[in-house]
Length: 592
Image (cartoon, rainbow, N blue to C red):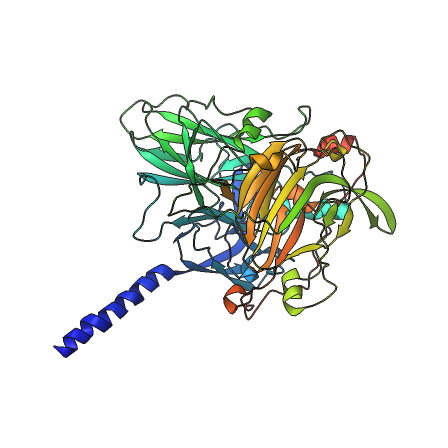
C-alpha cells in the first residue's frame, strides 16, 4: 500500500509534469536544404537557376507552435548565399538570422551551415524563409507553416482544407549574371525587373506558352478553406483576388487578426496573410489573380502581366471554356484600393492571443525613408550616385559580420551613431529636388534591454521619387499604432493612435508620401536588420541595424555562437549605383 501511495502521489505526478513540459517545449525537426542549379521552362524559354531541393518555390517547413527546427544548408551551387527565416523571432539567437554581413557571411560553394531556428512562444500562422544575399531570394524561398500547439486549435472554425499560395517573381535571364553586371558596369542598362509573376511557381494562363502547368486548387462546394499567402516577389506590392469569392483575413505575419471580409487584398513583399474562403458559388472554374500595385507615375513602363491560378470545384458539370476573371481585382494604379487597404487589420486581442502595446515610451525615433543622391568615388573620380537612405544615411555593408564584431568587441566595423532624427526638416512630401547628399556609412542604433520604442517612418518625395516602402524588422514583431498620409504631426497624429488592438506585424508599408507609427519592446538581445523589402531599395542602401544589449541574466542574453560560422573572406558588394541622368533615369528606374 505504501508503494502504491508513493506511485500515485509522487511518480505519476512527476511523469505527468514531464510529459506536459515536453509538450510545452515542443518537438525538434530536422531538414536538409540542398542548393543547386535546376532547369525550368517558363515563357517559352528554358533557364537554369538556383533552387533548394530542385523546387520553385522551395520546400515547406511545417511545424507546431513551440517546436524547434534545425536546417542544414548544403551549397552545391556556384554562388555563395545566406538564408533568412523571415518573421521568426530567433529568440536570443541572431547567429541563425541570416542576413549577409549583418549576422553572418555567405555559405560558400562546396560548404554547408546548420541553422538553428527558434520560434517565438506566441508565433502561429504563416511565415516564410528566403535567401538574404544579393537577389538570390528570387528563386530561393519557401513557406513556413506554424500550426496550433498539439491539442489546441485555431481561433476560428477549423477549415475543411488549406492551400499555400506563394507569389513569386520570374526573371527570364540568368539573374546572378545580370546582378553582377548591374554592379560591375554601374549602369541601369539592366533594370532587373520581373518578366512575370508566379503563383506557386507558375505564371498562369495569360502569358506566352502558359496554361498547361497553371496551378489548380481543387475544392468541394460548401467548404471553408484556409489560404496561406506569401508575397515572395522581389520588387513590388501585389493585389490578389478570386473571381466571385470574398476573402476573410484571419492572420498576417504569423499572428492572428480580427476577421476582416474583403473582395481583395494588397500584400507587400515580405508579408504573409492567412485568408479564409467559402466555396459557395456555382460549380465551375474561377481565376485567382495577382497583379502589381504601383505607386509611381502613370507614364512609367513596367511589367503589367497578371499571374493566374485556378480555383476548381469538384463535381459533375461541364467546365467553362475559360475560368471567370476576378473583376474585383484592382487595377495597377488604383491608389485608393492600395493605400486604403493598409490600415484595415486589427489584432485579435483575446486572453489566448493578447496585445501588449508599450505605453511608457523610453526611446522615440523619427526616420525618413528616401530615394536620393550620394557622392562616391568611382575609379578615382567623385561622382553622384542614386542611393536610398534612412535619416539620410545610405547603409554600407561592412567587410565582416556586425554580429561577430559586436560579440567580440571588435572596433572599426561599425559606428553606433545612427541618428534618431533626420539631419534637417522640410516639407518631406513636397516637390523637393535640392537637398543634402546622403552619407554612406555603417551606422547602427543601440538599445538597452527592455526599452520601450516608438518609431515613426516618414516617406519623402526627394528627386520626385515618392513610393511605398515595406519595412521589415528582423527578430521582432511590432504593433502598428498609427498610419496616415502627408507629413506626420507629432502633436495631433498621436491622438489617433490605436493602443487597444493594433495589428502586429514584422513587415509594414510606409505609404507613398505618408507615415506609419509602430511600437515594440526591445526584449530580444542581438543584432537585427531593419530594411525596405523592395530589393532594389535595399540594394541602394535603405537599411540599418539595431543592436539590443543583453539583459542582466543569462536568460536575457545572446546565446553563445555555434561552433562554426561561415568565413567572411568575400567582401559584400557596394550597395549604390551610378547616377547618370537625373531626369531620364529616374523615369526609367522608378518601378515602385
